[in-house]
Length: 162
Image (cartoon, rainbow, N blue to C red; front, top):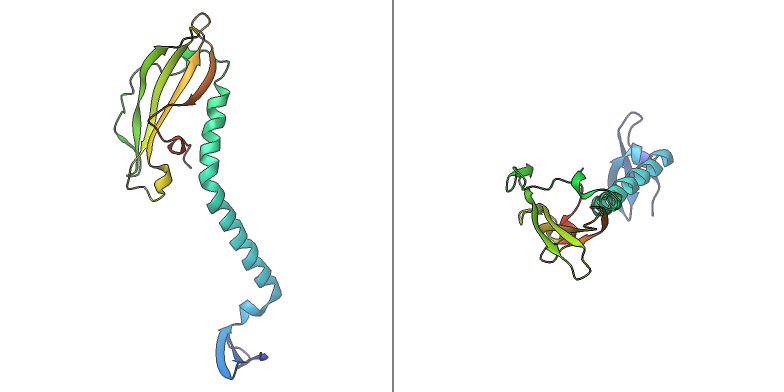
């Protein structure tokens, strides 16, 4: 290990002798305040990068949870006029909307929805697929009592986008 000294008084580079060879580096890297600042910025960037994907999915689940106890008629109960059209850049297309209504053994109605589809050209391959959800509805009151991810879809493609 060597000790770094400025090559010239007003030089933006430090001439460091490390391990028997000259190494040049910015004087700003040697100031402790900037070193801490770089670590904080890198940590914040990493946090946003890693949590951004899960926040979108969790946020979508929170959105669906808010619909429990609401009337099903507050939902769009028709085919989507935008079905199959790009709605975000070149990787997300609009779903079909309401696709089917089935009756469960319990007598509840299950409303099936196709919300969106993440196309295979999207960079995060785990998100690729269709967002298929359902609402279980009490037929007498038309109140949503539960929701879930439908078969044949990819639950990770169900997300809000920044």
